[in-house]
Amino acid sequence: MEGGCGCGRLRYRVEGAPLIVHACHCTWCQRETGTVHALNALYEADHVVHTAGEPEIVYTPSASGRGQLIARCPACKVAIWSNYAQAGPAVRFVRVGTLDTPGRCPPDIHIYTSTKLPWVVLPPGAKAVAEFYDVAAVWPAGSRDRVRAMRQRLREQAAAPDPADPGS
Ligand SMILES: [Zn+2]
Image (cartoon, rainbow, N blue to C red; front, side, top):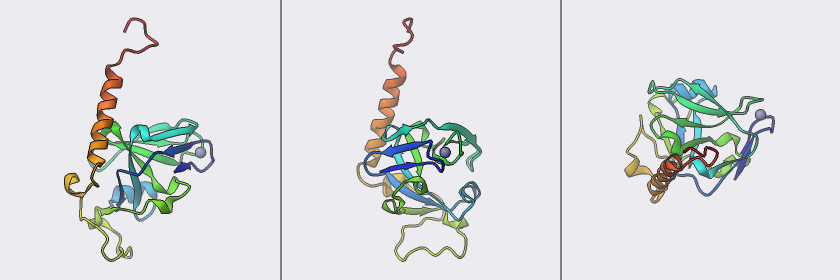
C-alpha cells in the first residue's frame, strides 16, 4: 500500500500486512488529530519506506510523559507516522488516513474507550478495551516475532561500523 501527505512532497510505501491496527480514543489522540480517534497501522520501521521526500521528526508530548516522535511532511506538516516511547524505534504507527487506500486497514481493536466520545458507536462485536491491553493476548500470531526481528536488525545496524568513518 502507498500513501502520502497533503501536498504530495512526501510519499511512502508500507510492505505487507500491519502488525495490528489501533483505533485510539485517548484524549491526546483526539487533540492531535482534531477528531474523535486516531487510526494507526503498526509496522516494523523498515517496512515503512519513504519513496519521495523525507519527513521531519517532531517531538510531541504524550500521555505517558515520555513523548512521541511524529514524522511530518516538511512542507505541509501532515503527520504520516510516529514512534512512541513504549514500542520504541522498531515500530512505526502509520496514520491510516494518509494511505491511498485507508479502507484496507480497519481497526483490529479500539483502545482507551474510557474517553471515547459518547456519539461514537462501535460496531457490534468490535474488540474494545477501556485502556490498553496485553500484547501477548491480542496481537495476531507472528506480529510479536516480526517486532523481535526488527529490534534485532536495529541492534545489528547500531553495532555495525560506519562505512563513512574509517576510524570506526
Ligand atoms: Zn506535504
